[in-house]
Image 1 (tube, rainbow, N blue to C red):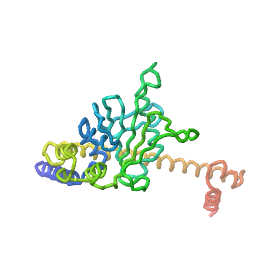
Image 2 (cartoon, helix red, strand yellow):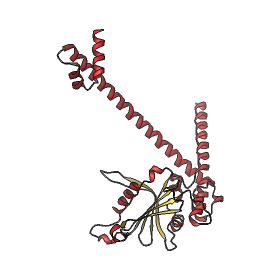
Image 3 (cartoon, rainbow, N blue to C red):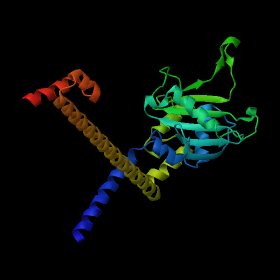
Image 4 (tube, one colour):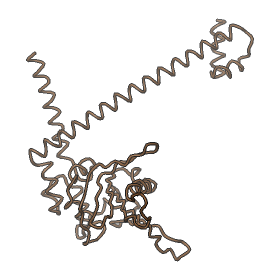
Length: 294
């Protein structure tokens, strides 16, 4: 019994050490850490939005991480950080390390899902607040070397004037590191693993707590343990589903083979007709016939 307890303790310590090493490497550019660091942190999110949008008048009054927009029959979404400013404008901030996760149609879908929650029944459409879908990408999304890309709808027949529907899509270039500029310093901070190397006091404080204090590290270890459990559950579920599917396919194949053998024994149908009836390939039917006569 004592030996078993020692083994459990040793396994727990090994897992904890692995979590701590992983925590050391985390950056704000990692979406789970980004969400955890900025959940409910209005000042830090406000700093990010002011830099990205080049606005000093923006005051964040609400922010929350991992907000889910559900649909009963269609695809739901979960956003890394949702923020609201003093005028009611909504901001969706997404971290994307892979290019495929920041496509134009995903941005469009995020905007449409967010809009569903912004207008109460019987209110005029013109009361719909402005919303911003912001992707902070690891790579330069459009390879133009600029710090920020602004996507707006325009009217072709009116000298490409703005459509002014209130949806603004923004891509922040994570490769942009000119620290003489606000966006360059922000992206530098997003790639730092130590708070002492960061320019922003607001961001550094949140990173320092989670990575460099006992309470913060304990919290992150619990988060990582939960993530590991979720992955294990998902793998177990996917494995069970795969085994079930493979078993069903094997049983179906065996039934087809048995049916084909019975039809061959009757000698009333051609190989082609048996193939069509059972769903087996013609060569498979011929092979069964050869086995029968061998």
